[in-house]
Image (cartoon, rainbow, N blue to C red; front, side):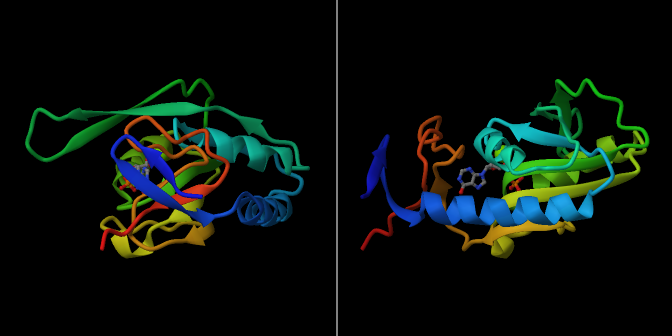
Length: 179
Ligand code: IMP
Ligand code: MG
């Protein structure tokens, strides 16, 4: 069933079952990769809250979580944005850190933010994202765990929003193509 949010209509793209199956697979990979360790998962709000919650339920390893929010500021210079994190209250030194993202689009957010985390000298720093718009990449990143590679079309649902709405949907929807 299509959904309308604000002025736009979206069609179902990934069902709840498809999403949950993929999350179980990602968690199985993480359980294996981090066996015997105690990784710190760092989900980036707001979009990743739902993915992080479902992923966490499937983890059987010892794991910690610390949600953060990123805020971008226009820099003093015209060279771009400075990204600061709100809520990162864990020391990352020597930790196995896993960034949890709902979607990596151009890669700019993580490209700008990762150096700040590297600066704290974690033992390892990996990325897990539910969705990856591979065609939209402008800032290449090594993404270690990807749920779905999707086309460069706007999606909502399962934590992702269109102007504030749609985060509560259990499925992921794609912007309807206008003919
Ligand atoms: P970036 O381009 O990789 O920096 O992605 C920036 C952010 O844009 C993501 O974390 C999402 O919050 C948002 N975003 C990118 N593509 C979509 C989309 O299709 N739907 C909803 N939000 C998106
Ligand atoms: Mg996001």
